[in-house]
Image 1 (cartoon, rainbow, N blue to C red):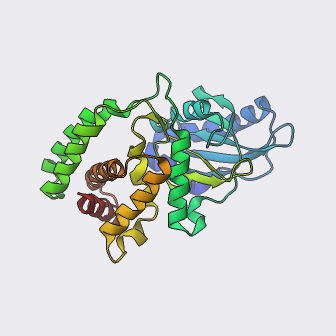
Image 2: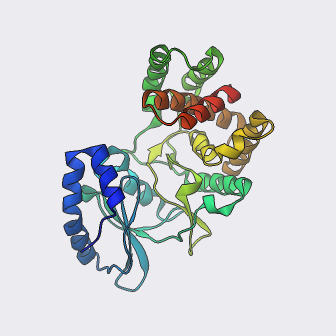
Length: 299
């Protein structure tokens, strides 16, 4: 019988209520069923993610793998579709899937991520290179970012009024212009959707592989902001944060083979949206401040 981490259970129930409690109650039986069906054994304890559990296992041939079971959340629907499209190209392999149970058996990476590298420039370049490798044609059925553009524009305008215009008119105007110019028509390119240093792991098959994709289709440059955020503390404490922001975006853009200014515009627009969303959700002050600083500096 598996042992579910107490802090994970407590936070899930707090966030999801009775559906979370019901899912947690079903989890031990589901794990046992999947281990038997996929011929795996459990040599190590569970680790946890934000919306699910990760269980290191051994496959029938002794290959190390991880059993990932997620809470039935909309953010997790297209993750297996992304893995299937990539087929191990720049991402961990998916050995088995059960979409109805939000469960996958995945290639096991190392327990080291790009965050542990200690070199922001190298980590940024590696992430950009992986983003380019993942940028294959997206199949039908994958959510298109272009379909969200109208909602983004409306939300930005309404949130600005609701929140008392926390961003300058220049920053808000720049974000709206980017949505109008770049977001309404985007390529049908497969994107990670949550590409940051913590979602890139050391691996045996390749030096680095991505995990935890959202599974989206759109402009590759739209992944630029998430790459910046994991090094945001050192970035905003630089002698000239604007120069440092643009320098790091240039590293990512060159590695991903995209236009530098396009990466700047997407990062600024998404920072503006992130600032509004974080204020409405009453998130920690430093998160709000970070988004707002990026949005203003890049405007």
